[in-house]
Length: 161
Image 1 (cartoon, one colour):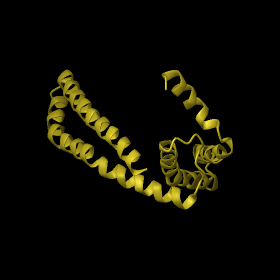
Image 2 (cartoon, one colour):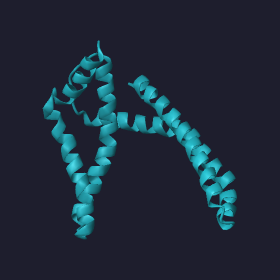
Image 3 (cartoon, rainbow, N blue to C red):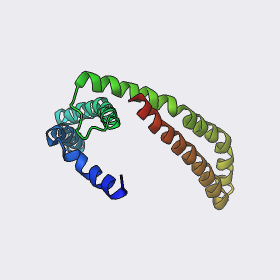
Image 4 (tube, rainbow, N blue to C red):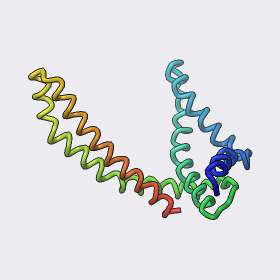
């Protein structure tokens, strides 16, 4: 399969079964009303948005896992929404994410403990360039580790499917 066919198929895929997209679109619309409810000081609108946000968190990762399952079987159709299955898969993906993010989080906390006092001393002594260099290197290191584990998490999700 050549690259142009892969790209063309990736643009066609979401529109193969258009009837399943309004559910996701409605969740996005209801999530988008949270700021409107906060600005208008309307607790009911805000509550609707928050409930939609939690439904989004509970449904979408599981639905994406269902898409991976069907895609691995060379199916070109979108999976149907199965509330119980999607919530169960979302919880599995959440636990998988927690496990894979333990190492980057531990590295981040260790870097804060090690470089925190040093960076405070650099700021107090007005050595701004050294502070920026130190924090920049720490940030790049943590970002690289995070991206490596995010890449591994991607393969773990494919394996989970």
